[in-house]
Image (tube, rainbow, N blue to C red; front, side, top):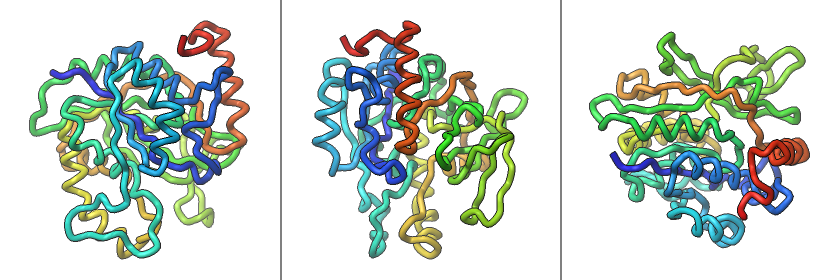
Length: 307
């Protein structure tokens, strides 16, 4: 079995945040959120990193992150492009938004032939999560008819922001610790006594258990999952181009859930007790900076991070 690869999704421009949040410092010495994820991943055993970015941010991303990571790991880049579509499909007129996390991950299909972990560049996951997923991927059996996968799940209440809504994949986990279903909700808000989501722009709301396990896009896959993404892409586009051609997104949890329901994947849920840190909105940044500073003071990370 080949050593696991770390795949970092960093193509989003952070529209709600109002800037390129992936390269906005949160540490005292210029560290950005993904610095901590990579530091934790390297400690866990990862040695190769693939960054998924937009071509337009390549120079900035390299200067702020890529240059120093190349001194510590084998680094390569994949580009999420609007025109990276199955044959016979074209970008709808007026579309500028990327096609979602599934298409982002699909962009690595010619670069990765080993088990791989997928993370968001703008989420802090904690060292425990990377140890869990690296150890699991290192012990995966060879691919068979059913794809062996895993995810690190978090309690919803540990992943909410005070300043607006978030997107989360809400998970159903069976008694054996296997994922039964994951449903992507793109608008979940914190409430005084829990959480709620809406699917119609706020006209109606549904309460959700704050202790529910959610996906933060920390997944572990084998290359077979990339084939699943490619095979399901045309059906997504057929629906998207007729219903919401400018904004519809092909999401990774949707692909995983479809493979689960068809018996093509088996997903082990590895639950982390850690509290999420992330900058979804500008107002989140002071709290994230304070949380990171406290982790340095507690000795979880050296000061500065990269000596």
